[in-house]
Amino acid sequence: MVTPTTFGQKGQNSLSDKLLDSTKRGDIPVTRRREDSKTSVEWLEHFRFNRENLLPIPWESSYPLSDAEKATISHSISSFQLGESSEGTNLLKAARVYAAVSGDTVYVEALKLFIAEEQRHAADLGRFMKQQEIPLARRHWTDTIFRKLRKLANLELAIVVLLTAELMALVYYKALGDATRSPILNHLCQQILYDETQHVCFQSEQLMKMRQQRSNWQLACLELLHRLFFSATLLLVWFDHGKVFRAGGYTFSSFSQSVWLEFNNAISH
Image (cartoon, rainbow, N blue to C red; front, side, top):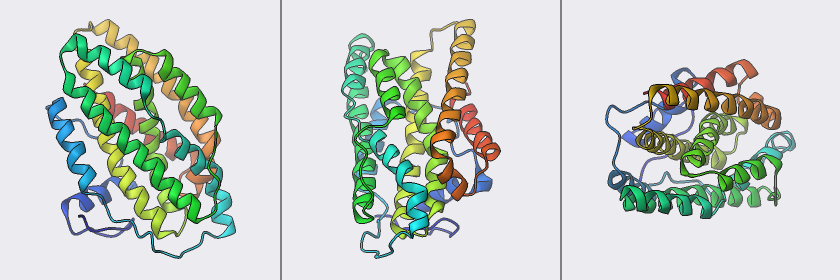
């Protein structure tokens, strides 16, 4: 079990140090490309290890959000909680098709554990919201759009949509962790940030594997389309969650710069 840290404090172990480094404003971008991508077996081992080595969350904390804090985060956190709750049925279906062609059946097992991590985020955010009497969202227009896009897409395009959402989440959970004085939310955002950093690597590496046979002009076209989609998503996320970003110390300019830095690191070849 790893030792908890708070934003702005030095950790005492490798996971906390790594997590702290990824949350300090001056250390963006969070994601960094590895020279050698992990295999699906290595990712499966990672997700299994991470499942058993989570940061402790101080659920016993009695800190109640102030009215101002609750007004700032309620709409936003309910939207992200909903987005984290997907069962991934269509994603797994597409992954099984890919596995049948590529022979990489372990990828499906790793993807199941990735989905389980996302569902853990949803459960933990929901638990926090229940403690603070913040209602869960049944539906949200941005979540509906992203789910429909993933449902209509093949595995490659589904990963593009997922990767876009996770890159936004890296900056969002930094802001959310700093938006209130809640120890629970602070620690919870640290854990989610660590998970999401690894998710970005998982998705970007898989995308790279799937595109190994593409020509340079095809890769350039795909990157251009991804950049256009990412630009539109950036504007939608700021429009819908600007209160949280501002409470976490971001302006639109610094938010935009942060997510583009993350994007460029994630897709660099």
